[in-house]
Length: 92
Ligand SMILES: [Zn+2]
Image 1 (tube, rainbow, N blue to C red):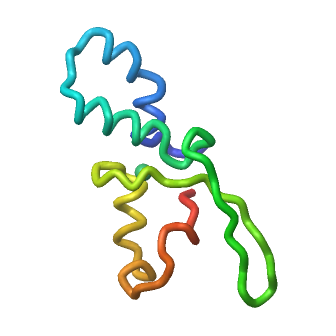
Image 2: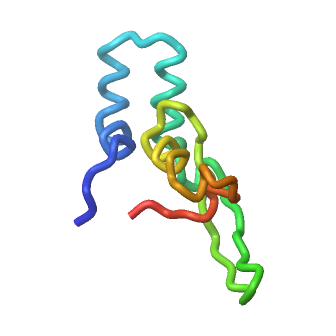
């Protein structure tokens, strides 16, 4: 069983939390970004290996600075080296 992610917690408990707590717009937007990061709601893209032509379909990331997935990818060594970055990695 995969470990729970912040997005899972937001998707499960976010709606009831938002009903009982008044949040400022920026926090609502951040919750929505995290809930939808790397889901069909944000669409997807196709990556293709330049050497073998293998293709892979991936969901788009939200790129919100508070999103744990996006911040993890931003810190990845290949990202710092100036390569394409987050589009080439999946979280497990
Ligand atoms: Zn994200």
